[in-house]
Length: 163
Image (cartoon, rainbow, N blue to C red):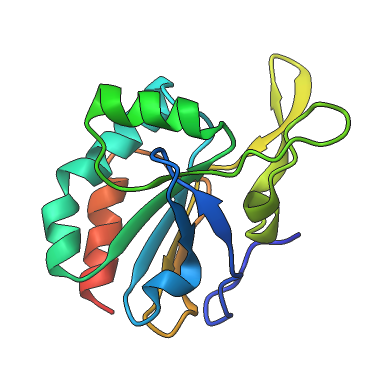
Protein backbone atom coordinates (compact mmCIF):
# COMPACT_ATOMS: atom_id res chain seq x y z
CA UNK A 1 0.00 0.00 0.00
CA UNK A 2 1.03 3.60 -0.39
CA UNK A 3 1.45 6.34 2.17
CA UNK A 4 -1.75 8.11 3.24
CA UNK A 5 -1.91 11.64 1.84
CA UNK A 6 -2.77 14.73 3.84
CA UNK A 7 -6.54 15.27 3.85
CA UNK A 8 -7.36 11.56 3.48
CA UNK A 9 -9.12 9.50 6.15
CA UNK A 10 -6.73 7.57 8.39
CA UNK A 11 -7.14 3.79 8.19
CA UNK A 12 -8.75 2.19 11.23
CA UNK A 13 -6.68 -0.17 13.35
CA UNK A 14 -6.84 -2.29 16.49
CA UNK A 15 -3.57 -3.22 18.25
CA UNK A 16 -2.39 -4.15 21.74
CA UNK A 17 0.04 -2.06 23.76
CA UNK A 18 2.84 -3.01 26.14
CA UNK A 19 0.30 -3.73 28.90
CA UNK A 20 -2.00 -5.88 26.75
CA UNK A 21 -4.61 -3.13 26.39
CA UNK A 22 -6.27 -2.90 22.98
CA UNK A 23 -6.26 0.49 21.24
CA UNK A 24 -8.39 1.49 18.26
CA UNK A 25 -7.99 4.72 16.33
CA UNK A 26 -11.71 5.34 16.91
CA UNK A 27 -11.03 5.42 20.69
CA UNK A 28 -9.44 8.83 20.14
CA UNK A 29 -12.04 10.42 17.87
CA UNK A 30 -12.27 14.15 18.53
CA UNK A 31 -8.61 14.44 19.60
CA UNK A 32 -5.48 14.90 17.54
CA UNK A 33 -3.42 11.71 17.33
CA UNK A 34 0.32 11.53 16.76
CA UNK A 35 1.01 8.12 15.24
CA UNK A 36 4.70 7.42 14.84
CA UNK A 37 6.07 4.28 13.25
CA UNK A 38 9.54 3.18 14.29
CA UNK A 39 11.63 0.22 13.10
CA UNK A 40 12.56 -1.67 16.27
CA UNK A 41 12.38 -1.54 20.06
CA UNK A 42 15.55 -0.71 22.00
CA UNK A 43 17.73 0.39 19.08
CA UNK A 44 19.59 3.68 19.41
CA UNK A 45 17.58 5.80 16.96
CA UNK A 46 14.25 4.39 18.09
CA UNK A 47 15.16 4.91 21.74
CA UNK A 48 16.14 8.53 21.05
CA UNK A 49 12.87 9.16 19.21
CA UNK A 50 10.71 7.47 21.86
CA UNK A 51 12.43 9.37 24.68
CA UNK A 52 12.00 12.71 22.90
CA UNK A 53 8.25 12.11 22.69
CA UNK A 54 8.19 11.05 26.36
CA UNK A 55 9.98 14.27 27.37
CA UNK A 56 7.30 16.31 25.63
CA UNK A 57 4.30 14.29 26.89
CA UNK A 58 3.07 16.98 29.32
CA UNK A 59 2.94 19.45 26.43
CA UNK A 60 1.22 16.97 24.09
CA UNK A 61 -1.37 16.32 26.83
CA UNK A 62 -2.00 20.05 27.29
CA UNK A 63 -2.69 20.18 23.54
CA UNK A 64 -5.15 17.28 24.03
CA UNK A 65 -3.07 15.18 21.61
CA UNK A 66 -2.63 11.45 22.01
CA UNK A 67 0.75 9.92 21.16
CA UNK A 68 0.85 6.32 19.88
CA UNK A 69 3.96 4.49 18.67
CA UNK A 70 3.89 1.42 16.41
CA UNK A 71 6.50 -1.17 15.45
CA UNK A 72 6.55 -4.85 14.55
CA UNK A 73 7.85 -6.52 17.70
CA UNK A 74 5.38 -8.07 20.18
CA UNK A 75 3.90 -6.80 23.43
CA UNK A 76 6.64 -8.39 25.60
CA UNK A 77 9.29 -6.46 23.71
CA UNK A 78 7.20 -3.29 24.00
CA UNK A 79 6.84 -3.81 27.78
CA UNK A 80 10.58 -4.27 28.23
CA UNK A 81 11.27 -1.16 26.11
CA UNK A 82 8.69 0.98 27.94
CA UNK A 83 9.91 -0.10 31.37
CA UNK A 84 13.59 0.39 30.54
CA UNK A 85 13.08 3.89 29.10
CA UNK A 86 10.17 5.08 31.30
CA UNK A 87 7.80 5.44 28.34
CA UNK A 88 4.28 6.21 29.54
CA UNK A 89 2.40 6.34 26.25
CA UNK A 90 1.12 3.29 24.32
CA UNK A 91 3.65 1.31 22.28
CA UNK A 92 1.52 -0.72 19.88
CA UNK A 93 2.56 -4.14 18.60
CA UNK A 94 1.89 -4.64 14.88
CA UNK A 95 3.28 -8.13 15.27
CA UNK A 96 1.41 -10.39 12.85
CA UNK A 97 3.66 -13.09 11.37
CA UNK A 98 3.10 -14.60 7.92
CA UNK A 99 3.06 -18.27 6.98
CA UNK A 100 6.76 -17.99 6.12
CA UNK A 101 7.53 -17.00 9.72
CA UNK A 102 8.47 -13.45 8.73
CA UNK A 103 6.81 -10.26 9.99
CA UNK A 104 3.62 -9.39 8.09
CA UNK A 105 2.33 -6.26 9.84
CA UNK A 106 -1.24 -5.19 9.12
CA UNK A 107 -1.21 -1.54 10.21
CA UNK A 108 2.24 -0.66 8.85
CA UNK A 109 1.05 -1.91 5.45
CA UNK A 110 -2.21 0.10 5.66
CA UNK A 111 -0.20 3.26 6.35
CA UNK A 112 2.35 2.53 3.60
CA UNK A 113 5.38 2.34 5.89
CA UNK A 114 6.22 -1.37 5.38
CA UNK A 115 8.86 -1.09 2.68
CA UNK A 116 11.85 -2.85 1.18
CA UNK A 117 15.06 -1.66 2.78
CA UNK A 118 18.73 -2.38 2.15
CA UNK A 119 21.71 -2.54 4.47
CA UNK A 120 25.19 -3.72 3.51
CA UNK A 121 23.77 -5.09 0.24
CA UNK A 122 21.13 -7.19 2.02
CA UNK A 123 17.50 -6.50 1.10
CA UNK A 124 14.74 -6.97 3.64
CA UNK A 125 11.31 -5.64 4.60
CA UNK A 126 11.02 -3.18 7.46
CA UNK A 127 9.28 -0.08 8.79
CA UNK A 128 10.25 3.26 7.29
CA UNK A 129 10.41 5.77 10.16
CA UNK A 130 7.27 7.85 9.49
CA UNK A 131 4.97 10.02 11.60
CA UNK A 132 1.34 10.88 10.95
CA UNK A 133 -0.55 13.68 12.65
CA UNK A 134 -4.23 12.78 12.54
CA UNK A 135 -6.68 15.59 13.15
CA UNK A 136 -9.69 15.44 15.46
CA UNK A 137 -11.75 14.67 12.31
CA UNK A 138 -9.83 11.42 11.68
CA UNK A 139 -8.05 12.76 8.59
CA UNK A 140 -4.30 13.05 8.08
CA UNK A 141 -3.35 16.63 8.91
CA UNK A 142 0.40 16.20 8.37
CA UNK A 143 2.88 13.46 7.49
CA UNK A 144 6.64 13.24 8.01
CA UNK A 145 8.47 10.76 5.75
CA UNK A 146 11.90 9.22 6.35
CA UNK A 147 12.06 10.97 9.71
CA UNK A 148 15.38 12.20 11.05
CA UNK A 149 15.18 11.85 14.83
CA UNK A 150 16.90 15.00 16.18
CA UNK A 151 14.25 17.65 16.85
CA UNK A 152 11.44 15.60 15.32
CA UNK A 153 9.21 15.42 18.42
CA UNK A 154 9.47 19.23 18.81
CA UNK A 155 8.44 19.69 15.18
CA UNK A 156 5.43 17.40 15.67
CA UNK A 157 4.41 19.26 18.82
CA UNK A 158 4.54 22.57 16.91
CA UNK A 159 2.28 21.07 14.23
CA UNK A 160 -0.18 19.86 16.91
CA UNK A 161 -0.34 23.36 18.38
CA UNK A 162 -1.10 24.77 14.90
CA UNK A 163 -4.05 22.46 14.20
